[in-house]
Amino acid sequence: MSEESVHKKLKKIATQQKEEKENEEGEQEVWSLKKDDRFDYILTRFNRDHRLTLITVVARPNLVRYSDVAETKEATVASDGRNYSYRWKVERDGRQPAYLLIARGSSSEFLTSYSLYPAK
Image (cartoon, rainbow, N blue to C red; front, side):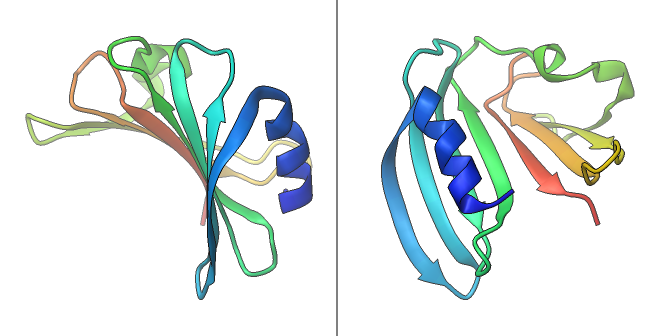
C-alpha cells in the first residue's frame, strides 16, 4: 500500500504524532488513535519507495487477548516464560500478498502489540 493511501485511511481514525525522516530503511511514523479504548497507537514504516512495509498496533494493558486478533489454535506459539509470541502466516488472497501477523506480550493471555509484515 502506498504512503498516501495509508495516510488517507489513518487520518480517519488517528492523529499523526511523530515522523522520523527517511534513512536507508525508509521512514517511520507514530499515529495516536482517536476513539479506540483498546489500542493506544500505531507505528508505520515505509520503504524508500514510500510503500508500507510494517504496521504495529500497540494495545493498552490487559485489554486485548491474543484470541481477539486471530485463532490461537492456528498460531505458532513461542515463550521464554516471561515473553510470549503468537505467529500466523496469512496466505495470499486474490491480489493481496501473503503476510505475517505476530502478536507479542508479557502475559500468556493479553498482548502488548501486534505487527503485520510482508511474508517472504
